[in-house]
Image 1 (cartoon, rainbow, N blue to C red):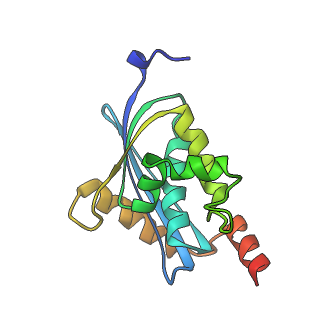
Image 2: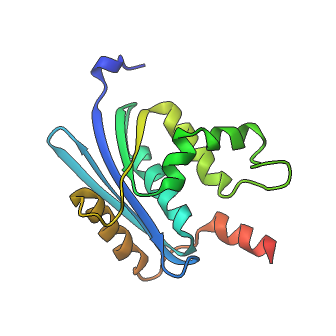
Length: 166
């Protein structure tokens, strides 16, 4: 394990959305460490805003090759509160149930995000979207562009769960 004093300090800005919610969706992330910068994005043909917000954080953290100290900015209260208020860990502890009758939504993505949160030292920070923050605006543009892509792949978990509910 890497001594925390030697860990890379990484700042990440993420955004995601779906046109129509559900509809075509995209996610974007801007990663910065030292003098380095990396932009990531992707999309799905049918998904939701919340799934894209979660996916942006997941893909950004997955891109880190070793455990890092991360400050992750998101304009999604769903993502930030899910992590900082312990909602996601509580849902997992209850077998992905919000309460005795309601299943948690997006357990596939929350499970991945919790595993990545355990790997890295992540400080989750909410910021208001579309408020002129340069890197958040860039993540938004990446997400919007990705959602408009041609031949977008399926969000397999979402489409499977949607067909089970029909």
